Length: 254
Image (cartoon, rainbow, N blue to C red; front, side, top):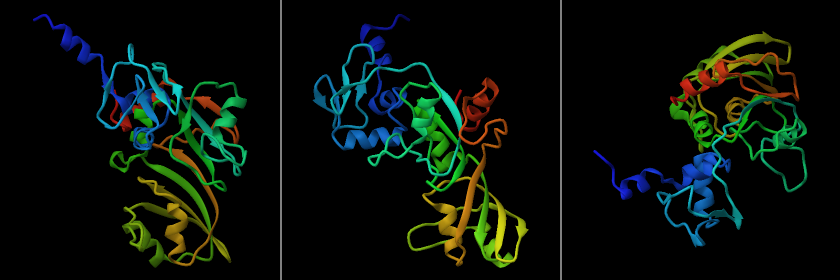
């Protein structure tokens, strides 16, 4: 049966948060924060509903006064982040960010990091303009595994490990079960292999802090079961088609 003009018009519309994510403004959650902050306008009118539908071909969408274009080309990069680099798009103190590194390697598109690694943490981080993929990679519901090599002060006891792997409760956070394997116990430090399927802020540091252990070195070595061993510290490259398909399968995206 032939569709009506109204049905065709509705089919061409998308939710405003999806449009902003596809345009490279960040994950859907980040884009919703922009809407709540009153920074998003459609045809000159401030958006006051997260479910607002827009027509990418005909509506004029602005964020903080800047016109935003619909971005159909998806870019997904893997960076081996050095210590001392921020996992942000920009920094008010002019410190180097992962996006600065991407620019140095010739990537000029609007990009953002998926999740974050602390300033003193190194390792694998995804940089993209695909807001839907970013949202799913970060959301604990999709259980995307992240693997870390961690060195902490002190000799971590087996009872502490048993507590951590089953999940711990503190005043302001609760962790889900994880996998921890001791790699080496020294006289005053312990090296561990840790696999998480969530990613709360400073989670590993806070977990071990509950038991009196300070993290002295932290490196993310794998994401979604992929180690990216060919990417040296400070280097960046696009995902291969096979790597992208793997991540999209984990995130339950076609």
